[in-house]
Image 1 (tube, one colour):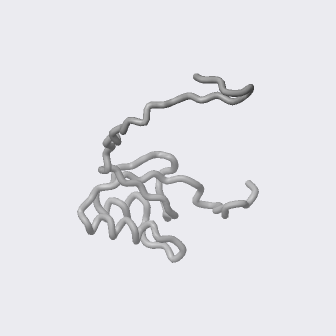
Image 2: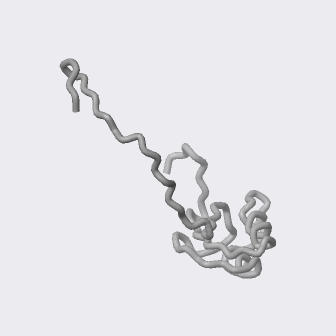
Image 3: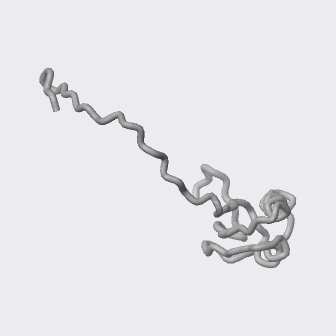
Length: 96
């Protein structure tokens, strides 16, 4: 480090190109409102029929089932995790 003035210093850092590390893109997650399901536990779901048995079907005020159906129609398995409560729903900013 080179001190130029009190409180000011220069530290040169190597500007070499760093390779981007590869990561897996084979895991998909969904977030949404479901009619049923175990909370805070990830579940492997391999078909829309399995999705319906674990999380229920289509809701009038949510799109999770629609997204899952479209995803499974493309032939991919997914891991889903339920979060929240079935009796009480909160909007962002609502207290408790």
